[in-house]
Length: 507
Image (cartoon, rainbow, N blue to C red; front, side, top):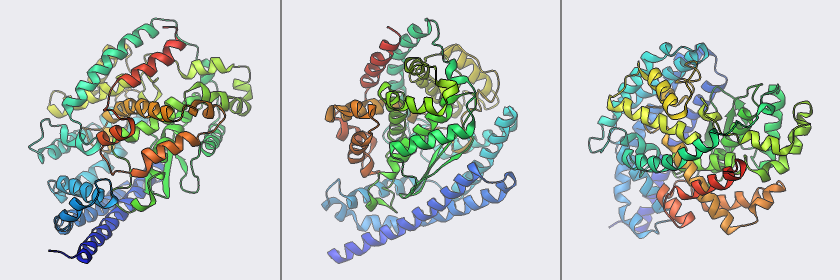
C-alpha cells in the first residue's frame, strides 16, 4: 500500500516527465511555424531532420515504460479523486494517449515526421506552380504511411478510425457518415433554393485592397476583439493556421489577396477563435497534455463561432462597418451596410473551401471526407485524385476546378499531416458552434446587443468559463453535454441557417 506522500511523489514525477515532453513538442511547433512563415527554401532538409529528432526524443520519453508504470501506480489515486479534478483528468487523458502511442513504433514516428516535412515543401512548390504531379510521388508515400499507421490498430472497425480517434476521439467513420448524411439532406434543398435566385452582387469585395492596409485593419480588429498581442502575433503564410508554443505564446497566421477583401479578414477572425481557446486554458494546465483543445471538432467550433456566428453577423458589422469604410473610403464609402452584409453572406457554388459561405462550406468538407476514405480503402489512387476531386465538385457543387491550385492542391492538410481524420472536424465544429452559441445566448440574452456596441466580453467570458478553462479535461461528447445539456445534433445549425438565410434570401 502506497502512502499519500509516495502517491504525491509519483504524481509529481508524472507531471515533471509530461512537462519535459510538452517542452519538446513546443520546440517542434516553433520549427513548424518557422517553416511555414520565414524559413528559406533550402533549409528544408535540415528542418526535416531537426523535427524528426525532436519528435523521436519526445516519443521515446513517452513510450519507454516509465510513464505507463507511473499510471499503474496512480490507479487508486485516480479512482479516489473527483472525475473533473485536474489530477484525475490528467491521469485519465495520459493513460488514453499512452495506450494509443504504445501501439505505434518509434521508428514509424520518425519516418512519418520526415515525410510530413518533405511533403509540405513539395506541396508548396506544386501549388505555386499549379502542378499536382510535383507532389504526387510524396503524397503516395503519405497514403502508404497513413495505411501503415492504421495497421497498428487491428481492432479498428474502419481503416480511417485510428486517424479519426486521434483528432475527434469518440467518433468513427460510421458515426460521421450518419451525421453528414442527415446534415446534407437538410442543406442541399436550401442551397438549391438560394442558387436558383440571381446571385447577390459582391463586387464591392473584389476591388483593389492593398495588402498592408488589409493587415492593418485586421490587426485593429484583433485588438478590439480581445486577442492579447503580448501573448501572440499574426504573420503571413500560404495556408492560415494557429499554433501554440505555450499558454502565453499562441500565434496566428493569415493570407491576403489584394482583390478579395474577405480572405484575410475572415481567416484572421477564424484563427483568432482558435487562439482564444488556447489562451483561455487555465494556467494550472500549462506543461501538461490537458492544455489545448478537446478535439478538432470542438476547436473548430470556436474558430467557426467567432468567424461566422459573430464575424458574419449583422450586429458585428453595425459596429465595425463604419471603421472599415473609414479605412477604405474610396472602395466602400458609397457602399451601404446592407449591400456589404449581403455580399459577405452570399451563397453560391464555389471552388475554394476557405472562401465558401456557411451553407455550402459543409459540402466542401464532405467531399474531402469521402475522398480520403476512398483513398484509405483503396477505391481511389493518388494518381486519380485530381480527376476524382473535379468529378465530385461538378456533381456536388456544380462547378469544376480550372487548375490544380484551386482544386486538389488548395488545402494543405493531406500534405502536412496524414490522410484520414483531417477534415471532419470542420463540419462537426459548425454543428457544435451553433449549439454552444445557443447556450451562451440562453444564459446571456444581451450578447447580440453587446456585440452591436463592440463589446465581446460577455460572450468571451462565457466561453472561457464553460469551454476554454477546462482544456482537454473532458471528451467532446462530455463537453457538449456539460455546456448545452444535450448531445451533438444538426437542429441548432439548421435552425440558424433558416433564420439567417431565410431572411436574406426571402425563403
